[in-house]
Length: 392
Image (cartoon, rainbow, N blue to C red; front, side, top):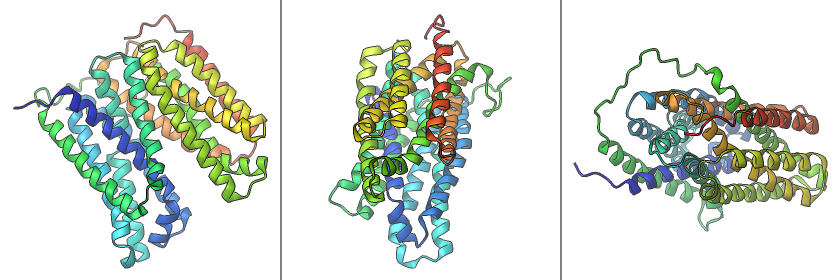
């Protein structure tokens, strides 16, 4: 059978990440419109999305473990199918908006979120595992992975700036999801099915976390906790610090987060070329940049401090994400469970982001920030103390 070129496989993998990231942020930006179309309150919309996030905690390690045991391209195709189905449900909201009852609206919204959480949640981790299996420079591969995911998250809200209605944009993204589904189908069909099911002897549960992953998980949770807290509290803090009304504060926050995502994408594109397999320098720089930026936002209350602080935080996360995974994969762990590890890490990242939102409700953002940054610094120091570990 004709084999698709490696360049096309790499392109499709990157397009999966772009679409996954764009879908995430685009739908969050559409909360007010979805509430109007469905006749539901924004709080109900947010609750449905939170439900999808909870399923994500299960789905990511489950599908990543399946990818270790079976053809990973096949499992990735199942997850892209879930993404496509969730986009179809999003389109149905606009197509059927005039014929909704309250129950129908809730069912369509929940089915879309269930499709996303249960079937699409493995895309980032499985993509990481496939990329690492290609045998290229590990650090460069992880920078590239994070860059495409973050570029997608930047593109999502930017799509709303196009001269088209939200309905047209959602329909267009759904059609694109169908094209992506077909491309992944072709790739899956090209994969050899020999050795499709791998040995399961003495294999741990996909939800059993190895003690060796404590440090990577601690680092992941520290920047996940802070990011979740920041996103949940930044608008209110801006409003109080800069004496802005809610609308002006929301606009300023959107500009900050968009610029931060752009910084992350640029740093990760460039970082893959500069550092390749050297994770120690970007990890150290990442910790210092994120700590400095977070403290600046916590303790200085002017507009410039927000711009500089977000730049530092974005630079830090851009370095920390790929450095952490490269460190983890250099610990000499079983490569047969690589997908499982990456899926667990993705789940802890999602969980910590949600917990960060809860911490934001505590109110003492300065104290919470210092505690979280303390966890970040201690985790980083412990990781750097194991610098003798050879990176694969």
